[in-house]
Image 1 (cartoon, one colour):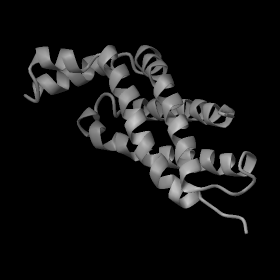
Image 2: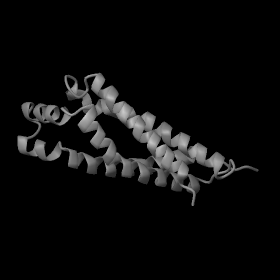
Image 3: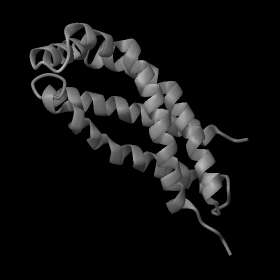
Image 4: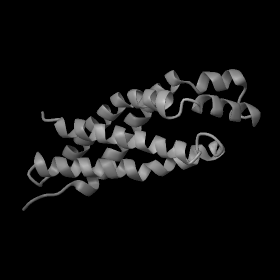
Length: 159
């Protein structure tokens, strides 16, 4: 089983995600615009979907000689999702230690000040360990759904 393409695109995905985190930080979404962070971060979704599209198209072209069934595309997307999920804790570590180390303090203060959570609950929720787990499971779940949908558009039969 050749999974080099999926691994390569998982690395591309992780680098893109780190670039997005840098953009969020630069635009103030982790500080003064933190109240809007929860929905602004959803703007990354089209980029994530596009990366899955590019990955599955490359897989179709290089491995399946231009012909790919939905199932082949889906399996490739699931493998990509597993790699993205495995790399996501590393991405979270880099994000919260180098790109935006004050994010947790900012979001905890925002949550407590605006009566969204008690300090204890905020501290339990907004920390590197929890975010590493969330990112891994989120990447896996979102990735599998994305793979299922993108595979519909990438499938192709050569006659």
